[in-house]
Image (tube, rainbow, N blue to C red):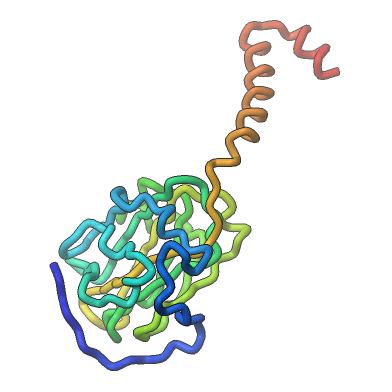
Length: 213
């Protein structure tokens, strides 16, 4: 469903803003992860229309307000965003609103692919932010130590800033992407662990003890 809006701007001085107008999306911000998002598999829960990919836009469409997600039954919304490889995000990019339709907070959950409304209250967010009102793109910097090897990020918007529904226009990420460079490390670790497990399972306790002596 396409919508059009005209509303007053509100400058958010607490976040970085866009100064790269006219730069092709492929170029960037150089660490924009748009091309690394598994866009067809983005899922939004409790939305009036659409399924989620609509707000994962190319860089040059980030300010477009004609397409957005709006919550349905109430002002809560979940957006699950998978990546095509392992990423190390450094910032969430978010455009929401206008005014009271802006979410009060956004909670980020790393690698929580099955998270939904039935169990989200029992899980502590990896990190969360207060969301400022404004027409600019808010840039919310995450703590790298909390997001070391991310294959998906789930965003939870628990409430609006006064309206009955919440609206999200744009979601993006800045960070680094790798082609699962962690796999060789995992393979080495698993091969060692499996070797010990096989000896124990087969009952060769003496051989296991001598190898560890």
